Structures are given as C-alpha cells and as structure tokens.
Length: 89
Image (cartoon, rainbow, N blue to C red; front, side, top):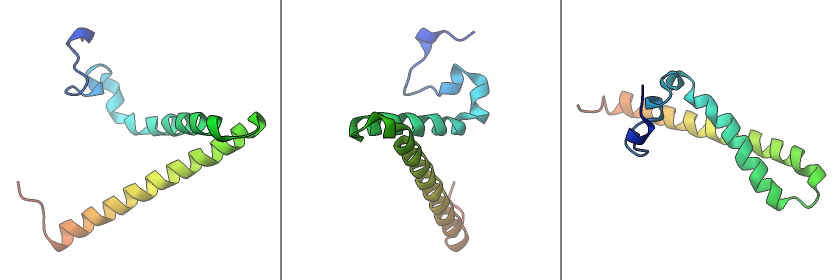
C-alpha cells in the first residue's frame, strides 16, 4: 500500500499512486484540452449559448496542434538519429 504522505510531487511519478495509469496517461490530454478550452472561452464569449461550440472548436485546435508538434518532434528526432547517429550513452 502506498502512503500518500510519502509521495513527493516533483520526484515521484503519478504511477506511484496509480500503477495502472502508465499505459493510459496520454489519454488525459483530451479532458485537459477540453477543460482549458471551456475555462478560456468562458471568459471570452459574449453570449453563453456560444460557449459549447467555441470550446469544442478550441479543443480540436489544441489537440491538432499537439499532434502536429509531436509529429514534428518525432521527425526531428528520427532525422537526428539517422543523420548524426545514435545518442551517446
């Protein structure tokens, strides 16, 4: 059993508390993007009836930008490994 008082936030991974989370942690980006969009658009829209549509559009934009950034970083790393060689150990 894990003692919560022994958990140090910046040194221990979240999987120390939730061991099964390591396979699914990336899926937590979806509700994070939705929550950020709702909070941000909640302060920006003029009419509350537009909140759902605007937050949905922003959520999709955030996820697409994250996917694009991940693809570009993966492509950069692939190019680095194949052109320069593997990173030294």
